[in-house]
Amino acid sequence: MLRLGLIGDNIKPSRAPELHRQAGRLAGIEVSYDLLIPTETGLDFDRLFERCRAEGMRGLNITYPYKQRVVPKVRIDDPLVRRLGAINTVIFEDSGALGYNTDHSGFIAAYRAAFGAADPGRTVVLGAGGAGSAVAFGLIALGASDLTIIDSDIEKAEALALAIGDAAAVFVSPALDAASARADGIANCTPIGMAGRPGAPIDLALIGGQRWAFEAIYTPRQTAFSLAAAAAGLDVLDGYQLFIHQGIDAFRLFTGRGVEEDALRAVLGG
Image (cartoon, rainbow, N blue to C red):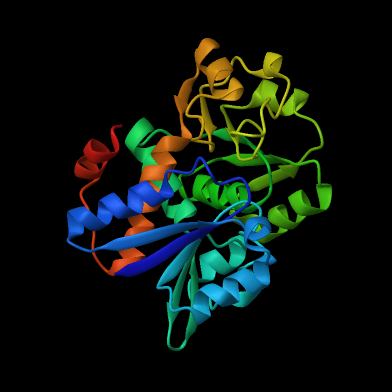
């Protein structure tokens, strides 16, 4: 039995347990996968993380709002992942806990699957947290000419811009108006719109004239943001595509085995 879990706050609707259990069946591995919500366990994040390690779990996925909080607890071998400063996958080894970011690799794969070799162009990234960091660095790898990072926490946005450095032209803005008018793409990497957090991260009237949009949220699969982007004629990459690709990458890290994307989509129903 391979024991895995997901630590996060608003995760009851998550399909991560189903993805990893089904991936396990495809790979011939029996998988258990628990949803671990700190407030429901009576433990804070730090104590819950250590309990998972002590109980012999193989690994964890980490989601909002803990992707940056977990960083000091793991060894990160990839210099790029150290720069982006967020972890969504942890492997427990005898030598310690190892940290990875499959949101980054998963976003690149999902973007290429949807848009091929198309350059992201000028892109607005909404949210400078764990998801925003992974997507921002992914956009640079995909060839984005410049990024505008928008977050209600200006210090967080500035820290992400500093981490990116001279890899691309990066701007930090408290408002979307001017940035959206010149943008080729808009990426929502905030939790606004997910189950339990309804609404939209921006004034939806600002969507229009861009070429593409990305919605990191996949539960629900359609959000006010993604629906508005589609209605405005943008090509929309939805969060379910990221969910699939990051999940395949995480499963490979957990097990050392790959699963066929088409086969996994078939058993998950999408």
